[in-house]
Every structure is written in structure tokens, then in C-alpha cells.
Image (tube, rainbow, N blue to C red):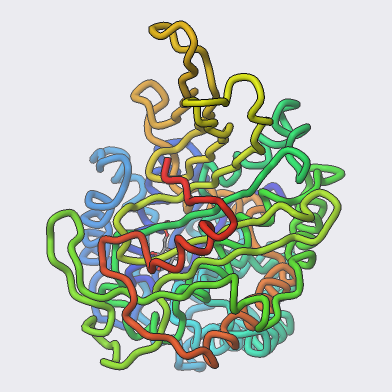
Length: 492
Ligand code: BG6
């Protein structure tokens, strides 16, 4: 199945995701020579518009959101690949017309019947569309491949996720289902395994004997904006923890896979989630903090509180912040806590993983005035992309003191150019049929098992929201969570 020629059918072709992420990604893939020559995008939308109008809108979006600006000659190539197809995907009769249309396009463009069905629509339509494709026999074309791509949320809890999965599996094989977790497409997330398993000095120290604690922080300055309706049913737990954070945690804590193939890697990731220590309500009482933002100031601009956002009830109890301590109960990690933190409307924007190494005995250098600073390895996911290492050296000027210094490797230097966006890598992998950077069903299932317990606990807790100001770093209790263990959050 090395044939990359294909038609990518986007359900939700006029939506936000298509304009902000998918089209810019296709454009950059074209610039990088990763888009096959025989490739077409069929964007499906309900609105009446001409192909030309649609293409112009896409061009404007690329100009606005792409890491590379529009070059007229290159754009002309993508322009010709894009089709607009007007269709209400709830109309089951319409699928056979779509099928004919795609078939004609195959003949004209040499795309050979290969299909990517990309569901960039609200999750309540996943099933309808998959049924429509199935009933019109669009999912199994002789001698060709058909792949299904779905965006999150993959269910809203374990039960609904199972139901959805069952429906998808009736139509597509697991190997042809690509569940997007766009964090896996980020450069530094892919680099976690390389750093760990490609460097003796890191891998040999990567365990509870040498690591004091690990912190995963995904902080945003943005609020929920216009997504209040979605977010009310989601909250930070479903929006960030069940998916992105669980995936990062798996990569940071996994054992080396026996090979670099998709299943070997996913199998090791799954074991991490399965090894998360039983999280009972008693455990959670002391180890989790929920928050919701009130009014505040971000970058000097006053912003409203969560309860004042569009489509959010005045008494909403949805969490926009979570801080959590977890233990992974296996030989490598027993005793080393993992602290997780994510929230909206915080004072900083960034995603990073901090590995804090254990302290040395305070015998030689760390006496009197010299306070020991730990060795830190920081994997910077965004906005900086790179690796930072903190260590101690002798201070020239005083002859005897120590100074803490750093090695800071950043990809985002002018020489290296800007780094590819997550969706570029992910779409390319879908074309190649490589699902390593997508979630396997059992990983999703294990992550829901953990998330469900936490969400269940939140529902029965008495919380006072809002409990942090926009522009702060979250509720005070999130700081106490580490302080009571004699630790602190690092903002490096
Ligand atoms: C999405 C969440 O999955 O990730 C959003 O739904 C969040 O709420 C976003 O803002 C963060 O992604 P990124 O790539 O901007 O860090």
C-alpha cells in the first residue's frame, strides 16, 4: 500500500479546523514536497458557494494561519487540487451521488480509488457519516485503500467511547481508523522517544532511583472563546487530560519498545496508563485540584471570567484547570510522582515536561550559603521547541561559589527554520498508512477509565468556582499540592 495517490474527503470543509489547520498543513506539505502529485481534496459543505469562492476563502485562511505565506505559483498547484462539493451529510440518499462524483474524479485525476475520509465535524455526526459511507459501499473499493480520520472528542466517557468505537469497527478495520491526538504530531512529542532511547545519559537515569519527580504542564492564555457550548460538556479533563496529557505521560514513562513499529510502541504506551495507581476518591481528595477562571488581566488586557463567556451558564461548575499528582505503579516509577497541570486563561502560554533529578547529599558544595539547585531536563514543546538542561558549575568571580547554568538547545533558530505543524506530519502519516502517531483503541479505553474516575469525583465534590483569576497560574491549592511534598512547579 505504498501508493500515496488519493482523494481526501473533508466532512466539515467550511469549518474552523479545515481553514485553520488542515488547509495550511496541506499547503506546507506541498512546499515540502510531501503532497503526492495525484492528490485531490474534496471539501464538503452545506453552503451554496462556487468552487472559486471556496478556493479563495482557503487561500485567505492559508495566508492567515500557515507558517509559510502564500506563494502564487505554489498556491496555483494546490488551488487546482481543491474541490468544493455541496452536500448535507445527514442526507443518506446523497452519498451515492458523492460516490459517483469521487469515482469520476478518480478517473480524471488518477487517484486510483484511494480515500481519506476526514471527519472534521461535531462528534454527534460521526456515526451518521460512517453509516452513509458504508451503505453506499464507499469504504471498501477493490484494490484501493480507505482510511477514516476522526477528531476528538472520542466519546464523552468510557461507555459512549465504546459505543462509538463499536459503530466504527462495523465499517472500518482498526488499522484503518486514525484517531487524531494532534499533540502526537508535535515535533518535541515525537522527540521524547528519541531523547530517551537515543541517549545513554538520559535513559540510564530515567527511573525512580535518579528522578525526583516529573512535571507535565500545558498552560494556555486563551480562554474558551466561542467554544463555550463544546467546553461545557468537556472541561479540562476531557479537553486536555484524557487525551493529550495521557499520551504525553505514556511517552515519558514507557519502557523501550522491542521495535519501532506501530504496535510495539502503542503496546508499551498502554502499559503506562494501565499502571496508574488506583485513583480512589480518598486518593483524589489530597491529590487533585480543580479550578475555574474568574475575571482578570492577560497581557495587560482585562478579560471576563469563564461564567461570563458565550454559551456558558452563570453557575457553571465546569473546570478550566486541573492539577493532579499521579503515581505509576511499576518497577521503574514506584515512588516518583508525576505532577500534571493544565488550564485556560493562565499567566503563561506553554507546554513543557520537566524532569527533576534527585538532590545530592548536602555535604561538599551545598553547605552554608549555597542552596542546591537540582539538575533539570526540560522538554520544551511550545512555544519554544527544544531541550534545556540545568546543571551546576563553579562561579569564576567568587572563586568558591557555585552557579547554576544551562544548556539550551532550541529548534526554532533562524538557521533551522520554523518547525512543521502537527497536522502536516499527521496527514502525511495517514497518506502513508502509518498509524503510530494516532491513538489505538485500547489506549483510548484505558485513558477513559482513568478520566471517568476523576470526572466522577469532581461531580460529587463541593467546589467553589471561580477560584483563580485570569492571568494567574491557577488556584492556590495547585501550589500547595507540590509544596506539601517539599516541591514546586518549575516555570523554565
Ligand atoms: C485542543 C483543545 O485539543 O487543544 C483546546 O480542544 C486547546 O481547548 C488545544 O486549546 C491546545 O492545542 P495547542 O496545539 O494550541 O497547544
